[in-house]
Image (cartoon, rainbow, N blue to C red):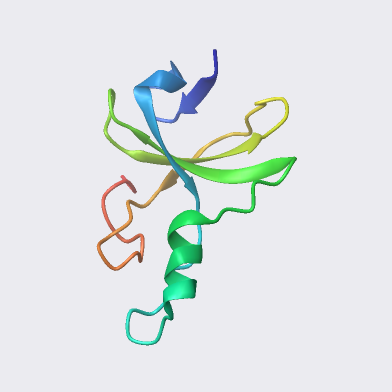
Length: 97
């Protein structure tokens, strides 16, 4: 079982969260090629080691958190509040307090 350290609710089972994945910059809708959109939507680095991830606490406070997780050991570093992604991908939405 993976415990995620929610700053508002305390440590919780990862089953309460939706994994939003690694943060990747969104391409410009006006200039992006189909290959750039495909890469943005489907391709991830999948590195071994420490990765910054965003999770949504769907069964708790309904806020986004950003944690650093080691992909081999699932060890977690302290979380930070993360802004919810807006329709434009800017991340300026709910979740910062």
